[in-house]
Length: 171
Figure 1 (cartoon, rainbow, N blue to C red):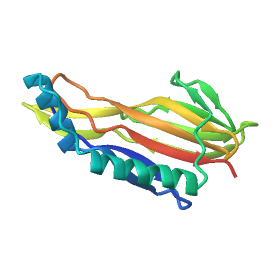
Figure 2: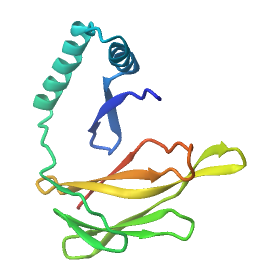
Figure 3: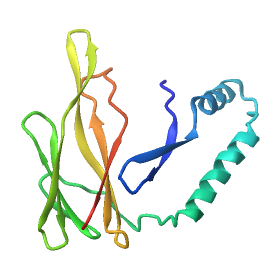
């Protein structure tokens, strides 16, 4: 089982996410070990409290607002309304997807192609993961949409990349 850190991202004014790890590999191992031994875990309360305090302070200080709504069904080829924007996801011939972003009236704003990702081989088979637009969250007040990209990992025993996220804002 792979142990990957679980972060929360702050989206900055320039669009670059700043990641803060919530659950690290050390905590994951601790929890897994306690499942195997049936003993109560001993948590590093000082570190967990410090991280929680830093996040709470930053949320309050930077005027955090949650995304108000979610679009869970993103059908390929459908034009989906997501708060202040519309999204249209189409499949590309190479197995990738093209995400078109439009304003509320349907005027195109941008498009982004998301290509398949080669994750190595299993035997002689290439482990190519194809992107899938999984879910979108929207924030009408800030005129933005966040899209989750998951992956179809291909043949058995192939790993897919971690989910990716794209953020678009209306002008």
